[in-house]
Length: 245
Image (cartoon, rainbow, N blue to C red):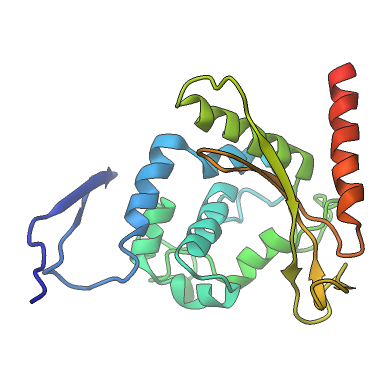
């Protein structure tokens, strides 16, 4: 027989609201594990570390979602298994996800447009602009105005790895493993190539892992036409140039 926990589980409060998990109350959400991710983010600020990696050219008087909120919504959605932006047309009404993301108005009743009230989160079109803004975007760009600094993202990933690893003390040695693997693409995506080894069109991202925790260090999105050996040589060459500079 299944035994259900009747004891309340308390989490960090949200403004004046208390946050608790009650398995006997309604409505019931299937993404309650996201509250644990919220606790981790509030303590470590992992997502918040990347906000400064983006340049926001939007008019501050006309936006409802900050870069941090958009990042948090998309990353938390991915962590909960929602990989497609189309999912957010339904998730934008999810109060639990709004709480996890950190929206001050988790009911969506304070939205500017009446048609958006009751929807505290961004829809797929807004998130799409975050994903597809080109590197050369500026204030003159029409829609996509949140430009990412890729080099800054790489630096932040490494800084984050060092910060989290230092929580366990200073290691005497770190063994880093570089591995290129396939990332299948579907449709006519820019930069796709057919890879003979994997047998399909894909990108060929390069990952750096380390033993222990956290395992992930940094990644670089590369095209499938690239030779993994040349990628490794490029990394060692850049590392040597930085050490000699």
